Image (cartoon, rainbow, N blue to C red; front, side, top):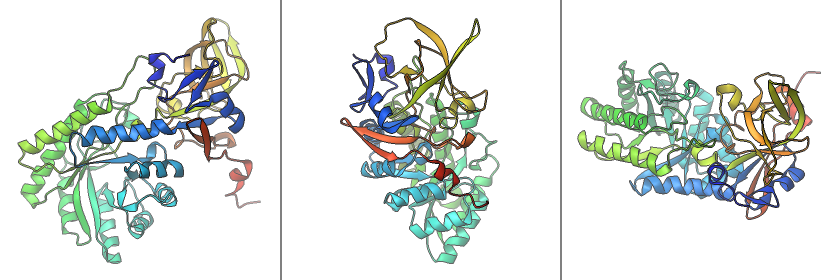
Length: 441
């Protein structure tokens, strides 16, 4: 049974229906749930690799000297880090923990960019010790801290300076990062960005290789990226004029949107690449600057579509003339995005994809002690029964990194699927895991 085109765009490209069941990477979703339990996060390896290759091709076909740096905050584990390394991407980490995962997977440290708005001295020292390729400096405090550390260590560290460009990305305020009133980046408008450039150029241990902006996430429009690229190049031109600084790298960050629900398609990777590269080319030419190494940092757009969450239906609740609820064995502890900023998802009856019976509206609720623990409101599905398997597509980004042990729940298992075979890449937590860090009696 073929999957309709609207669903196909939010499921991994290997998704299919066999004997009425959703299959992913050639694996029956019901069999996966039976073997590994639910909640279960399933990542399609073919989709992951295709996402990597398509974004690399989109940018390098337009500017050969482009670098694609995967944003680990979207999701990172050893298996994914190894896959990202094999595909030739760099890695954007934002904490010592993400750096530790990358190291444990043998990721090449020279391809690591270390982000974050409040890196500790310990984290920066760890980055210097393992030889990360680049530190993305977020503020004047960090500029001074890193300068002292590299001088004390007798090293020289490549760095980018993250700027606050005062660009509205037209996205949810929780995932908007380019405005002047933001915790991220050194503001250009206040003169602090130029002050930071001068300080970094004067530091004997820091090699300021370029400039960086990141304006937000889940951005559907091209104009905010074009505006940010223009601001970035104009600032680079002023820094050459005022300080003799020639930026060898320019990064416009990430934030490319993905489709989560029917009827709301996202622009293609090629569309983002065309808008960004063409703007950089035009702005550099207009300002008399050579076109440098261009960096982009996609995260969500690489992993979101590759991930599908599987849940088992449990309790049902009918409120006549009000609402019908179906509860699953997960919820906000493994995917807080709907509760945090109203993220919308589709829901599919994974074990009954061919059910041609009557459909009705049902709200998919989680099992946790919060009224806001709702995964999907008013999904249109066949009559759900206890024991049914529910699939939530496009679950590969941000659900797992934001997962918690709320209500002392156990974080879910994760499997990678390919060519009909599944491999467990993270086991489900146990009660012993919950107690492992306890020290009191």
